[in-house]
Image 1 (tube, each protein chain N blue to C red):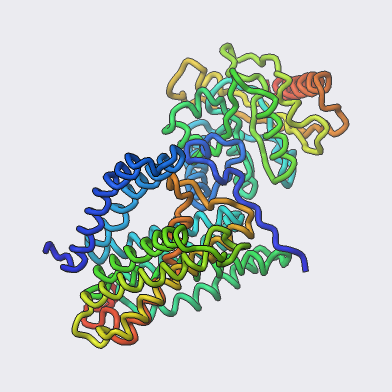
Image 2 (cartoon, rainbow over the protein chains, first blue to last red):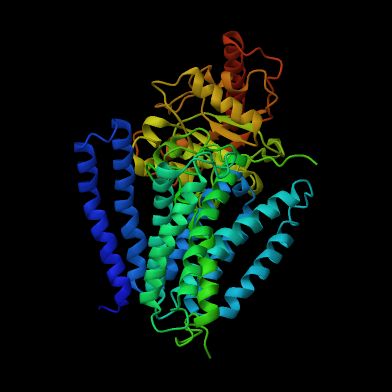
Length: 321
Length: 240
């Protein structure tokens, strides 16, 4: 279907259907008198943001390998921008320039389908950051600015970069869409089951609204959904066994929630409510995409260990000899 | 061990269009690149088209913060004063520009922020609050303001009266103010002209004045405006 992976097509169609039907659900809830005016306007703001965000995320994925890789690179850069402006790291322009260079090279490594370089960039960029940090010849604050640079590069460059490299797999589109869908729904499930069953707080100092009930509810629902999707995408492979499917689902749900907690912790430490304002109703990009950060590497390496990623596809597309 | 200090960007939490107009706006890597490219182009333009001559560069303080003030006859003024700064200082320079001209529409505001690194001064509704913000920034972080105390471009090329608003920014603060006089800009690009003529420009930079012991109230502001007006006037007589 226009070079689109069949499962990816159906997931995208499902997402589109849900987005189209959501207003009806809102209207029904409104008719039943279940929405306060404040909640109603909040829901609509969030919904309108999703209407813009979803095509921006799904579009590049469906458009093909290169658009997907570039899309992830842009997301990495935008996340770094937010983080560096929130922490003040952006004032150290040489450090920032190295992080940006690292992200650009990671994007190139993914686009080139060159795994060796993709892996090498972690240690190379970290070394470069540590050395470039010396140039200012100001030991005061050296650890802080270099460490913030390394932290940001590993989180927003390397961790998020795994999504870009994933696009090199034949079924990459389907995996990526399944992961995106489940990570976002994981948040929704945690919110809803938390409202229904949540009593004990999960981490009151880090994120006062999260409950253990919500975390468990999300783990159950997300695992069921993601396991079924992987069962379809990787049907007939070694991964298509209950044990693997459940592990993958649990891993996705847990790492997704960790990303959320990590970003909450960062915000608390900085004393900021949101890390940005680009997405009305959500805050910054990082407030919305925090849960993606650790899911990417976890899924990539689990699937990669058993099936490999992009093994049957041409490698070193640009640099090949 | 001391706690780490995090200092978010001054314009953190503002919507993009608010951030462009914010007096606390701080440029990142993108801004640094666009502004750097713009400076290169402007410097080349001033050198070749206007054969810009600068005297008194040695009067510029070695480090920020400080303020440059000058006579105002043309849109070339702010460009020339910023271009006269050594490369190392230029990233700290903020021309203070009329909000109603340089920040009215989003496209123009984007240009003023990304290329000129200008900060808006809203002439009709400029309250003490904006002055206070400019003052705080000047004192608390390395900043160079380029501003024109006449408040508008002189239509006949003569030096007008300096407004006391500038005093609110520097009175009692340990921040040097550098008087400058730009000769030739009125002939090259008067207020009613769109495109500049290739007339030569001559910028003279004077010795900095300090107003550390001037009280931060109306009388003090008047005195600062008067002394700077005299200093710029003296540079003019010297140039002519």
